[in-house]
Length: 188
Image 1: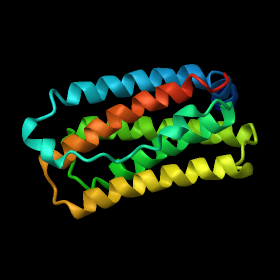
Image 2: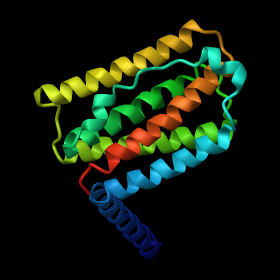
Image 3: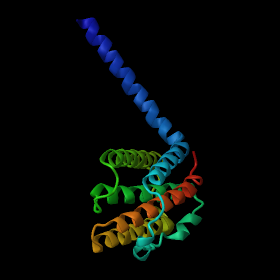
Image 4: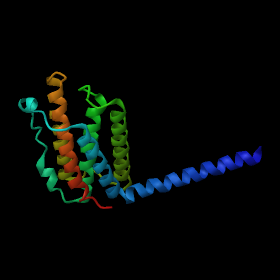
């Protein structure tokens, strides 16, 4: 009996030690991991929607992504921007304000992926002691928060419908292209 307990305790220690190593590796390979996540996400959203319905063109809204964010060249600001974008979409999709057209399993899988990736980036930001020091960092976050507020306001003002969902899907796909641009500027 005592041998069995020690074997289980030993196995538990190995699992805990390997999870600490994986956590450390997450930040060392954050850029690669984020690029893989971007590709998976784009694939999911492309599978979800075919062609933008012509009936929805009049509902199409420009949410005005703050394009100056794409000019970020500093690694820490790129990481902060990627985190804010992922976190913003996580908040929108978690609320399911639209009664999204995603199947339950797709929605759950994507939310899990988004949540996991935001946690990894948040942990790496903390580990690397990245803060919002300086006006650029605060301005970046503020501009992205306003962008997501425009999206939330649009969703709340409109009734649930296919066209609203189509607009959001288009915005998400476009934003993952922006995330990819910013990810390339992050240090490994």
